[in-house]
Each structure stands twice: as structure tokens, then as C-alpha cells.
Length: 124
Image 1 (cartoon, helix red, strand yellow):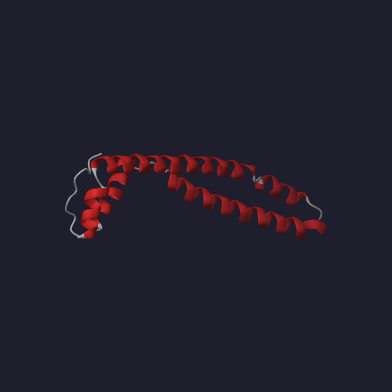
Image 2 (cartoon, helix red, strand yellow):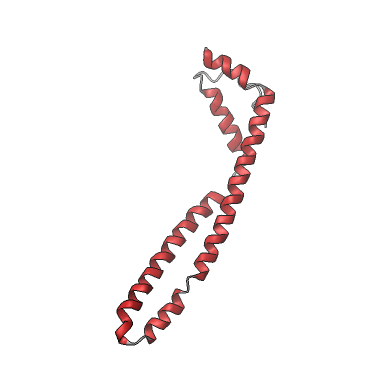
């Protein structure tokens, strides 16, 4: 009963519209931030010149092969980590239907009461 009353008072049309606007802004900001992050990761990946390092390794004197081999292994591990981060970041950036995401969030507020009644103001 208390939850239903809070839903009716707090989730008025004006409140819902402010909530939708705020949620859309947060989604857009998250996408923009993620996009910048993927650009930085791509640059970092490009800067890892493993092929050049491997060429140097092949020409290195035998006295330093252990050192250069471990450095090359570390570069490969770093590249794999950056590639994994980039894959995760790109998954976040993929476009989604922001309106549907917002409506789902607002719909969850109505379901807090357990009966799903009183869904006034759920339009986009």
C-alpha cells in the first residue's frame, strides 16, 4: 500500500519525464565516455610494436636473448590485455535502444509494488 502511494505521488507524469530525461542523459554520457575509452585503447594497441620488437629479438646477440625474450613476452601479454579491454569497451559502446532502456527502468519502478497497476505516464 505504501509503495503504491509512493508510486502515484513520485511517479507523476512530470516526475517521470524528468526521470526519463535524466536517464537518457546518463546513457548518452556513458556511451560517449566508452567511445573515448575505445579510441584510447586502439591507440595503445597500435603503439605496441610487437612485430618490430620480434625483429629486434631475432637480431639480438645471444648474450641478451633471455632479457629480450622476457620483454617480448611481456609486450605480448600487454597486447592481449589491451585487446580484451577493447573488446569489453566495444561491447558497452554498441548502440542500444536508449528509449527502450529508459522505459524498462521506469517500468521496474512500477513493479516494485508487486502488482504492476497504475502504469500511468509510461509513454516515451
